[in-house]
Picture 1 (cartoon, rainbow, N blue to C red):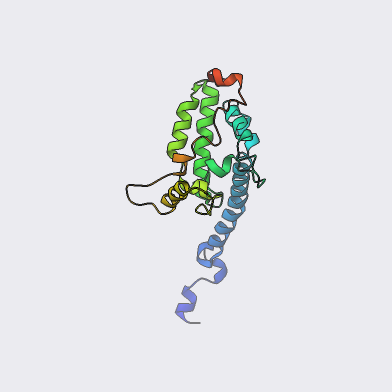
Picture 2 (tube, rainbow, N blue to C red):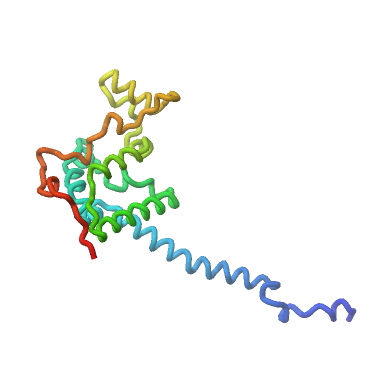
Length: 199
């Protein structure tokens, strides 16, 4: 036996990290912990983005009732666009969906439990300001063929192919389609200030 062979320890006496077992063990534990955690979080995010869940908060109830009367629910195609379709990024954009949903949830919980008045007008303006055309175009894709009026077709063209300085947003024209105070569907809450439950 040479000196070199005698100097190197046998394989069973090498530290775990030199044998490659420790990295594999860490990766395995990471997968075992991360996958269920991610799955439960993702499932919870999707489940709490339904119209029924949104309406469980009384500050959102008038918006929910207006949505039920809108063309986003009642239309000839039978398609229903729910809260998540308009107010959140697509779920397959996982990070952006998770971040936006969490931010909306925290804001709504703070408003609900601190007892601060819910200013529908201010919140509506903030929502319109943050709306992007991509949110509408998730469902409304072939918008150049939809309008039967030339002016509407030209406006749709400006949305699809914006010229610098002349950018248009869908909500510039289609502003009060969903969450408007319909005279056919008035609630007592429309005339009163909303307050969270408080603690």
